Amino acid sequence: MQQNTGSNNIVATNQNGYKPGDLVSYQINNDGTVVGNYSNEQEQVLGQIVLANFANNEGLASQGDNVWAATQASGVALLGTAGSGNFGKLTNGALEASNVDLSKELVNMIVAQRNYQSNAQTIKTQDQILNTLVNLR
Image (cartoon, rainbow, N blue to C red; front, side, top):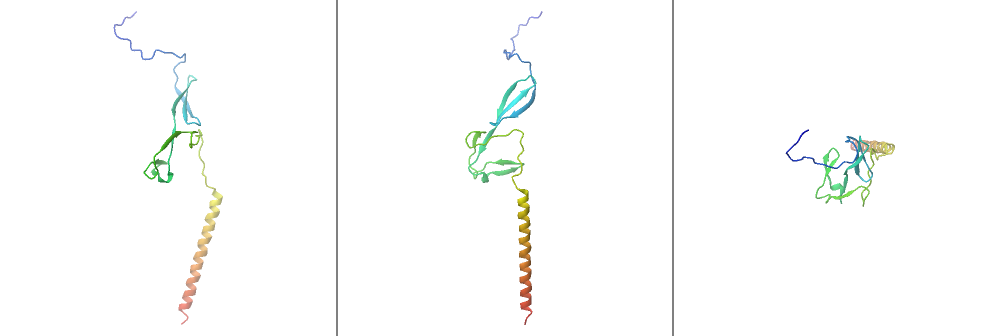
């Protein structure tokens, strides 16, 4: 048996019936809420992802590594959550693919190369004609 004369230092006095759990995984919902899954089969909202819109996206300053900073040209950031107002939704675990049609761009490159070759040939022919005219005396 033990008797203490000091004060009781218990911080939390409530019990929910679940054993302590460790964070096992997390997921991000379409509305931007981050939900943690624990080893005691409990879920808890850990936070909310906030999105920003700008009046002029072209005015943002690149900081490198896909990081952008607001400038006077971009305007003030309008903050909101995913799925509200003009903000899109988030997709957990998705990787954005390239939005370039590779075959179309390859054809465009070949056409540009042929146009360049044609222009070079035109300049060469013009130079030969000019050279012939100069040598006609």
